[in-house]
Image (tube, rainbow, N blue to C red):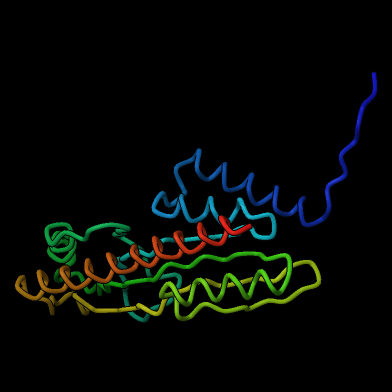
Length: 204
């Protein structure tokens, strides 16, 4: 019987390691399913793999005093539609307690390792043309080049300050409508980039 030993390159070993971590996160329910198609496309490319990702989200952060890591806590998180009822229940709960509540919109962020400069430049171009205007190369090493895919939509709005509500029900409705419109636009950018990479792969 003859055994063949397959020797993997350092690039292949790193990629396999990150793909294994991704598979584990999926099994544990930590993976953002909104990105499944796009991440699968990137990772199917022989010269790219993802190291971390988020499809964009709205977070509600509860703060006591100055904003530091030790006294800020996420009490609400939405990757999809933000409903007024879910938002206002947190406002009612924390009134008069001296806490502040901040509503934050965070754009999609995808970190991608590319094996060479031409691949990194292709990805940056596709991402920017799809609406991810803050995309760029942020690390260059002999082993790989890191690309940060990021959109420019960001927002931070206080809805309770020091235990006092500063957001009326009428304004809460408008705020949720605005947030949901921004989230919808972010999802469209993800789909556009996915289609652009599908076309890139079809040309190979």
